[in-house]
Length: 174
Image 1 (cartoon, rainbow, N blue to C red):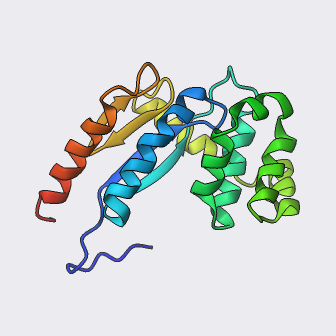
Image 2 (image 1 turned 45 degrees about the vertical axis):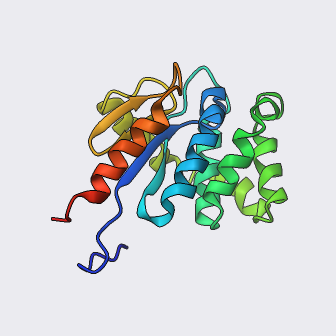
């Protein structure tokens, strides 16, 4: 639900196509933190799932991230897992539940969500939309209709995102 009253125009959206087992997405964390610090709620950051087949725990990670969102800790959970990609590589799904416990989330619910697949449709829909718009790797950013690929290098991407966000924020709302 969004407040679309004229007094508060909708914030521009930055979609971040990512996966929790990707070291490149971990590299993007500093930029995402800086963007959140600079724009606060004037820029909506949305995690979009794009688990890559080469990472065997990425699909479970995407589902776990959705469960964290459901429990009100989406970004803290994503940051905690991305900060420890090597542990996810080593430990797999039990690590996803372990991180949930560290954040005080309901670990039984996490475990159940990973088993019953309640978030699979969201992950599949994100992945299908990503493929449809040309996402091939992570992280990939989409803001103001422009796609920026960060899989090869993060160099200069935050500045480009800021340019687009500043332009969008300066435009009078329709």
